[in-house]
Length: 106
Image (cartoon, rainbow, N blue to C red; front, top):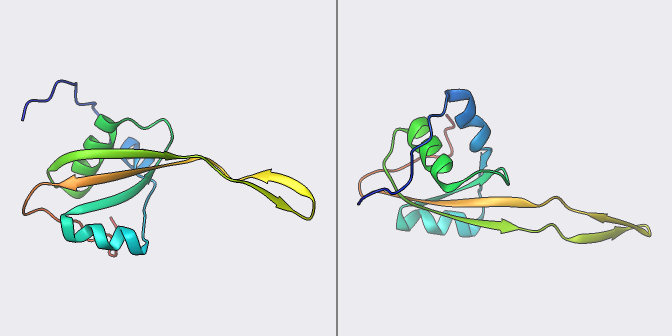
């Protein structure tokens, strides 16, 4: 597979800034059967940065990265209107034979 983008050079510190935390939900547990892992990332993170960070931190080969931006809900509490923060989630598909155990940490 040819890559038509430049792979960013990230330091270890930058990698930890790109990958904020793993998403541990029922749905995220189900996708592990398909060799996928879900991470919470900053809104400004790009797919090449996410790929480089996962490959650098976990020493795995990444096939693809899919991202979704989740807008925060507007909520009311005791008559005061507030808004939850916007988040971004990355679903990383790993190459065959690679796996990440997110329960142990980095």
